[in-house]
Image (cartoon, rainbow, N blue to C red; front, top):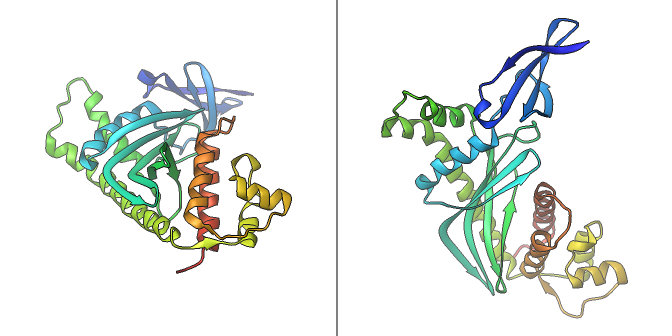
Length: 276
């Protein structure tokens, strides 16, 4: 019979409790994570819980070193996305792209503490945040350093010097700077896509297994009705229109699923876009 062997309340101020599990009275390698009395997940003892609320605190403390401004906090079940922009913009065709990044964390073991690239896009007068997760761009952040960064602050008698704060945050800041740098390469690729075009067959190849609700009208016509293009379609226009549909179409699709769709879209375009 399963039972609770031991309770740990390190993160009680955020409503979390970690319950070490026992089977027939013997301690196991598993624990239950509980939030405000609700079971979040059962995971191994090795899993390090970092409350989403704490991650928001950490992210906000890192922002000044990156000259970043928080633009949104999005909760998706047991996951949180914290979005930031920086004062760096690029203009391409009728679109303005503002650089940024986002930090994601999950308390149910479905995502490591990670930073990746985000662009605030003004596309034909319509603004949306394009969260781009690519393996070459994203960076896992040290949960130990993130916890250490704020843990001392929460101790009643602790007073952290500026030097000590910098010591705790330096690695996290540098990793996010790398994300931003890799993000510039993504924007450069978007700029190159302004100068090349897709034909009918390539558009069909990209979109034939893509959710119809997010297809641009021309892609839907090609896939569903066998429409043939008389003019080539600029790669950049098709990409941005699809991203706009993914992020602004009102559906029950979660932010996590939308990020996966953008990742798939980016990869498909990178594989098929003509090289200038």
